[in-house]
Length: 564
Image (cartoon, rainbow, N blue to C red; front, side, top):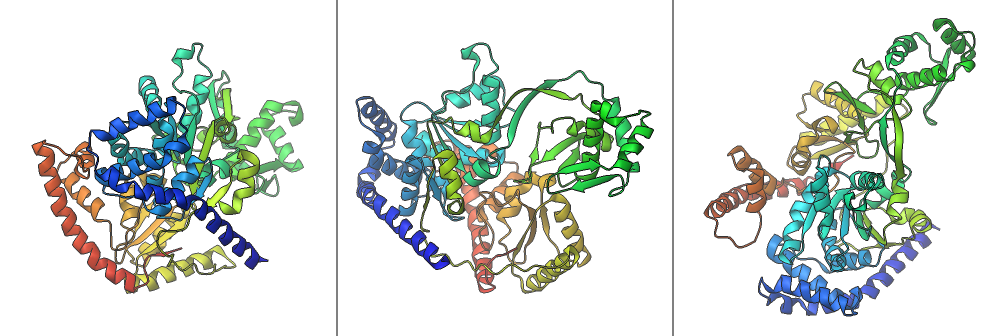
């Protein structure tokens, strides 16, 4: 049965690839023509495409030329030329489908193709990522391609002012996170005048990590709330009382259902402790007790939340990232604040709410990319009307996927993990170890410290250095422990990433981030300071590239990067 499934999958993939191959051939034939264009001809071509659309042409009519233009713009500005399979990925996205592309196949570059094409309609395109870091990185990285073609690029991340948001949404192509887009939609629905809205119509979206956003987080509610008027003293009172209750005897914990239930003994203790005759007649107290028990028995520090700057900050269960400004509802956040003895903020009341599922279904055209989507195709089709196309890899896949190893106890598992790390580290093979929480990553780090094994830790507490830490995970002898926040969109190069090492040294020499973004560009310039910075970068890149190439040979001989 499994054999038949994989045969059908391969047949479907070949069928889809054949369907798009004819257009790929046309795009390839246009390559010399685009290579002959002057720089000034690129925005002129964009204007020509817009006029053709206004005169009755369709996106399908101009797709080959538009894709060929973007490919050449990318080659000139980034030094990156779209592979044929990436062109197929771009066409799949333009058709309003999901492109399943393996890790490292260049999803960021693929998105430029349908984004440019659909932006020609003048209604705006949103490229959606799972966090601010990726949105900022991808917008800055790909902006030269769009700008070279005469289009504008916006960035929608946390902390923008009203005018900055309005300008970002007015851009031809806007990069942003699912959270920011959803909250902006809610805020727009609360304004009294249409001109005060920041978003335009929801025209076309390309969602990166589409399985995470449209399946895993589909029912996650985005909530805008206002401050309530209930006093906060009761939360502290309950936070002191709850630890006196005993698990199993006074309350039952159901972790799977995320519920805590008082037993009869527990109810009697609450009634005695708060001087009341019947808890069921005091529904507000019963609710507060329940939330206090949840905070005490279910919500774990450094797993579900962190305490930072005297505030409780939620850790996203799917990405492992800190969710700044987000709060649990129904008094749970206040119960955790009281438990951790930080200032309890007043309970809020819901003013507006929407789920990601309902928000993204409002787009006229929706598409997405991920490394794993085919297994969830039924859900994508039934909920969003999206089908999945598996895009073949540009190079043969040589990664070895080994069987899972299961242990009877957590202690046995972690002892085995440390032994395996020690064994591989002794050979120099780089290791990347994925964990599900901050707590687990720090526990594993302590175990490695006791064994004297040098390593890097990446979790929501140290997210500022994410790209740098993950990008160097492929260096000889490197050991990296990361929560599931990591690995989203960061290229791990065996032997190390010379670009990031060169940029890091230039930053230490005093170069600004703005200048560092310019030094890797290909645009012509007469700015002497920038030309000098590019020379410094080129020299440093060469130095680190030589080192990385030597290390890469060693790492490949050892079996490449080991990940578990």
